[in-house]
Length: 542
Image 1: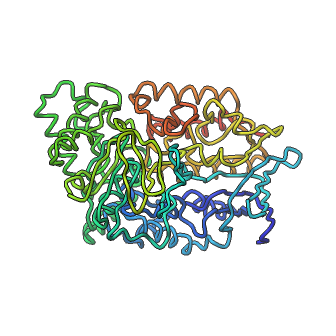
Image 2: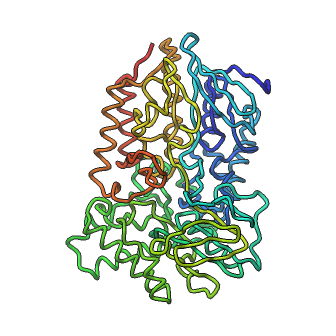
Image 3: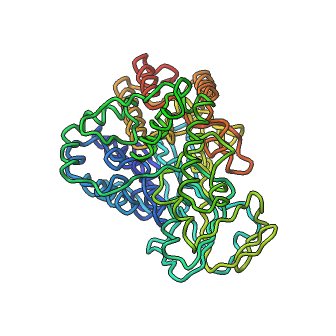
């Protein structure tokens, strides 16, 4: 394709798992597409996030494409929870196996996407001067793709090596013999800290908010077990898509519908509750929180789950004061994404690890040689920032996206994102978002949600082709009703109490709106299927 200009049926922004699968599906329809990707290879979040210990929190046999039975049979995962290098290798394998790269333009950072009403097409421009024109534009930009620097004075003043978890050097970092400071104890920090601690001379962990984490119980996959599992792969996939299992993976050879051990902890003795939770803890993974059906709705049940984890922390961490600092007490368990770790709490038993509580002793500024808290100066050789993302809306609002009449998406979303089904935005015809705000997205195994969204988008394009339609837009009243419904569902849970990035609470000035759809992938799929069956109710075609 021309390096400076392309005219296609569909312009796709992002070559992660969503962009690659969409390209594959469009080719099946005989539609032309160009993918614009900021990196120099496929993989999306797994291309950028190369920090030590980076690993998926969904089981590898579930966190993979289901569209090709041949692909899922031929690819062999090595561990229960795949590492970043293995997931990236898988993405590259898919791109090569289906010859996707010939329609992907790498090293292209999209700066704007503008709808030309007179021609009913999208003009997408990149920082490098490339222009792609398409009848449709699909934002496959990912929910966790815009890393953010912490709002700390002097953050760029540090004179030693400074690394950001989600922008990690491709050739890795050796911390041997170094004193290291790391800011942030979210998912990235919890994965990186044990690995850095094994290498570093000394590691200072600066923690503002402790997070709940459960053991992964990771390990190599047994080849014979995998072979038996794969005999039932199609049925496992069906369960994932309908939300009948955790969606994050199954350990059973035969797929089973995962029913909670109990509807509620209310009628159980402490001994029974501990027995149920202990079994989940020993099994490992985010599956832990599914022990009780009302764990994210009933404060009493939630408190019992939280107390169990806090008692585990106190048992694992030998120093009582450190253990207490690691015990989350300011949010219900699960209302911030629960972390899955390998040896995280055990790491604080090492002599070369110091936990610094910056809630009681706030960071004043980062200095040339370390950082200064209210009461103490810390010096280190290397600084690591594991301070998270501008999640879900960051990538979309980082571009200048303009719809009908030049209306800016940033203005439309000034009080928080509004979408119809997390798929479309009123006033932005022929523009689709994959796993956008208003869909299960980050509350699910994202691969399951990506495939469902792409299939829906492609079916909609096919419907338009079959009916002679050139343009589709979300109805404004349908959008308002859906946005209200998303809020209503979240309000029936404890999620809004979490103060998490689900709400945008980690980004200064961002509207506090609970963005994902909390009813689950099964319920959401039913809604989308019903909309389709009813002639794409809530969408306007012309």
